[in-house]
Length: 122
Length: 111
Image (cartoon, rainbow over all chains, first blue to last red; front, top):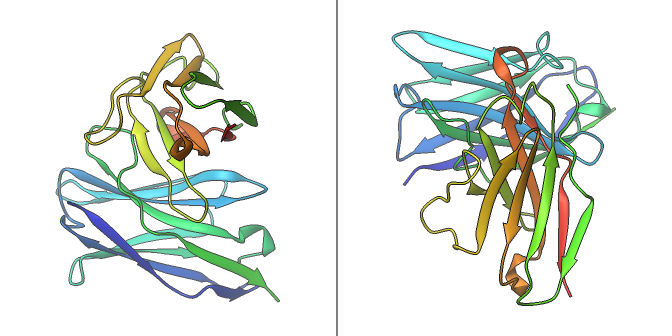
């Protein structure tokens, strides 16, 4: 049974970098049969897919157009986890951030991490 | 890319059936049988209840079912129970530029 455990600060200053980590148990970040995602949820934007990474002999990443210039998702194979970095944040980036997995070849998110409320404030 | 359109709220009495619609476009819902549905209780992460339009994950009640016609997907909850009171979201794959789009969410109230 795959489980995802998120960690990271809940408060980030405007213009700085938001950083979150998602630790994986029950699977490996470099699995050829999984894709690892970040999704956020806010009252103003609803649920919004942010990006994904996956390993198929090499690492691949795809990002939402709305954050493409500011986002990086990286694997950490030594700790079996992956991370989200979102640069130059503004109060509009205030949201609950979730990590989530989907099986290779599929397009549904299961499971999800527990969520992290990140508030962006000056 | 706009969010998929769902009714803001739907209500029903215990034992009744309700249906939640999820309207997209020919670029997402209408073009792929890759619609999934999620149930979210307050303060919790979304939980997958339907995938690929009408498949239920192991452990999800048979009272949940999904369907699709054209650009609109639907989730039906039959035999409504108090525990079904939650927010429900649809999601569709939208191709290799947009990737995924979620619905606006529907609050289900059990009267």
